[in-house]
Amino acid sequence: MIRIKALVLAGGKGTRLRPITHTSAKQLVPIANKPILFYGLEAIRDAGIVDVGIIVGDTRREIEAAVGDGASFGLKVTYIRQDEPRGLAHAVAISEEYMGKEPFVMYLGDNLITGGISDFVAEFQKNKPNAQILLARVDNPSDFGVAELSEGRVARLEEKPEHPKSNLALVGVYMFDAEIFEATRSIEPSRRSELEITDAIQRLIDTDKDVRAHEVTGWWKDTGKLDDILEANRMILETVDRDIRGSVDPSCRIDGNVVIEEDAVIEGSVLRGPLVIGRGSRIVKSYIGPFTSIYYEVTVQNAEIEHSIILERSTIVNLGARMERSLVGKDVEIKKSATMPKAYRFMLGDASRIEVP
Image 1: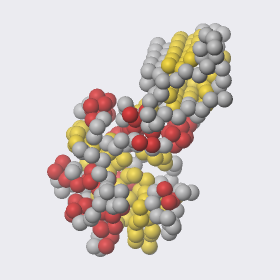
Image 2 (image 1 turned 90 degrees about the vertical axis):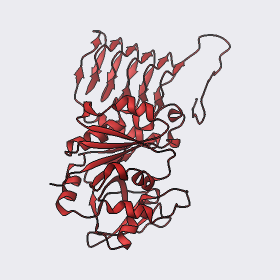
Image 3 (image 1 turned 180 degrees about the horizontal axis):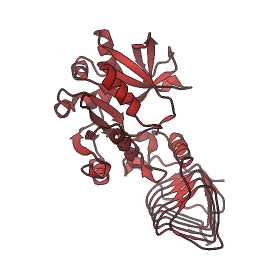
Image 4 (image 1 turned 120 degrees about the vertical axis):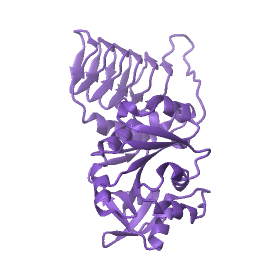
């Protein structure tokens, strides 16, 4: 069995999730109260991989504080600094010293894949190609890198084509041997001024290297956009079991698979799962509906919330309408004013979006 390392990409600026990512790493946005990045690290561990290099950028300190040395995941983590997000192939290029001559899996830190990557890694270990890409069938291939296959081999890749030749999108998980490093040195920056991983893999194809494909059998989500994060949250919550460890008073009604973590307090409220309430949170005279994740030390009082993600230490009080399909950042306060004259009052960061009735 060949030894394999992992390269996890946790840099990037997360522009599609601003303003959340002005102050926080997109890979640490919680899905069902677990940071997105942690799902990937667990999938890597479950595939039998121990040594992991994590590409970090401006949010390096936050990523390092969350992951540490990797011991809590059963991993040995090394951090690799990327001065600017210059493309996926650039991330590969700067990892060459860490990888040495050993093959590795590259995993984009904001991806979620059901079933993990164990089968994908095992197939690579068995066949020993120069590269292996993970593919999924999508309805909007123009938004992704797209692969064309010929007799089970990858014949051509194209990044976000205007007229895609197939509906097979690159998922964001790849296997490489050391040939990929020469390929990254042989390509030029794209029109986006980035070194594209699709160009590097195409270089392998053009030089007669063995590039194979593996198709996702479950679901996969690139969580770079709000709607995708909310959908991933829904999918993960559908798998949770009822688990009530916090305090729930007798007047409450709890339906379905609801997780209430330790030190959470629920008073006079209706909870309709699947949903999760984080540790130390307090829900008072409120309705929390399906597909909602409330992180730790959040207060919700006299409010209704569905299909949303509320980050830590936020407060939502006395709303006059139901909140839905929302992502609320850390330390946010949302409340209905009791004073006259009636008016909306906001303090919003760059790239914020708000809808009012």
